[in-house]
Amino acid sequence: MSEYADCHALYQQSVQDVEAELDFVEQTWSDLRNRPAIFLREDFCGTANTACEWVTRDDSHHAVGVDLDRDVLEWGRLYNLAELDDDQSERIELLNEDVIQTRPGLADIILAMNFSYYLFLKREDLREYFASALDGLVSDGILFLDAYGGYEAPMNLTEPRDCKDEDGNDFTYIWEQAEFNPIDSCMTCHIHFEFPDKSRMDKAFSYRWRLWTLPEIREILYEAGFSRVDIYWEGTDEKNNEGNGIYSPSEIGDADPGWVCYIVAQA
Image 1 (cartoon, rainbow, N blue to C red):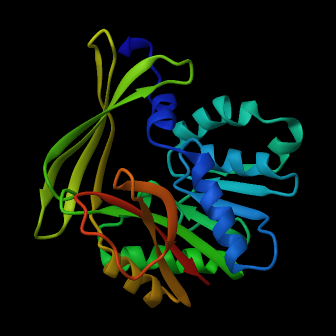
Image 2 (cartoon, rainbow, N blue to C red; image 1 turned 90 degrees about the vertical axis):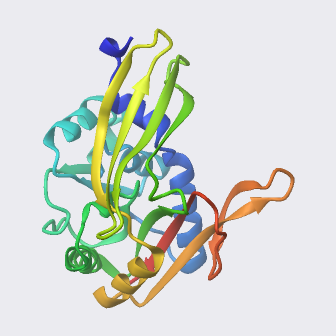
């Protein structure tokens, strides 16, 4: 089964939830701004799944996706943009460019999700990216990021999770934290996929990144020139003591083994 599987399709099904992500983005924008957001830029866009979802939500929405990987952009064109109608296709553009150097016009919203900016291993490089993103926003624009951590985040571990593909077929998503260096906080992670016939797609995706902490990220965003940076922490369902999917600005988080939050940086 692994020989016939498509790693990009599996990634979209197991890692991304673009509907929930954009629900949060739109609600937060509405809470903070008294005008509609029109132009969204998706940095490190990969298959541009989120950008495609954005243009389908409103006839006024425009999007640009930016990524250095030409092959994954082409996959996005073939499988995601191909699902759009003519009007929607005219309102989206994919750029094979460096997110620091790109200048596609001033965006209302810039997204850097799935911890993609963790690939910047040095503080000065991350600050350069944040400063470039700020330059790419309108005067009241917002940069949305996600982040993860917790006391299991630097551990060497493997976490499997049962998933289904878009046709309803079972597969297992496996997240592996293979190496972590506490001296520089850099780590190597892999995504593997396993199938019911026990065949596997090993190292379908591999990442070399730095496990940035929230204080570091917030400090660097302020250094880059953002006027306000808020951490949106997930609430807790009191019945099962699990996350409830509702993220709110907070200065106090829970010391969980693993957590994911949003960072909202205003220009």
